Length: 204
Image (cartoon, rainbow, N blue to C red; front, side, top):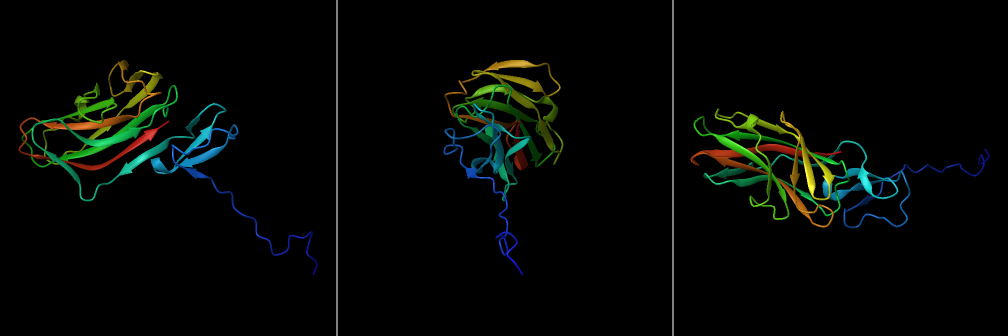
């Protein structure tokens, strides 16, 4: 048998999407429409638009099922879930949408959940929303926090979904600062335990 044009025995190689960290992603030499994966964020896919890397679709930045569960006790506000947001990561109009599932060990205390954004990654960061819909007083009731924070300017996030009117929130400059989106929990008395059952954060 002939070699059929020289390709006998050769196997075509599958296309492989290159993987980078956010810090090592290329800018020089990238072409419009190029797709890469960013390993920092659950290997989410990003696409180059000629100017910057944007999420290709609805990209999951983090999915967390903590084993053992992350827990907090006491009556002080404490961070229970956090998403890092590197400087110049969010594109204009880019939306962060975390979903957090919490449980409570008893049916007496009130649980208040807050969302903060800033450079410290602590309860000192700017308060963005207190989602009253997930304030729980029932044993092992899960609170689903599902809302969106969209970048409308370098120092402005817009709360656009939580059963509330849209609100613009002034935050640290997201183009020049590494920031954090933090979900916090606070018990009214502090004798019970709050557990993080699972969480994820989408970006689109």
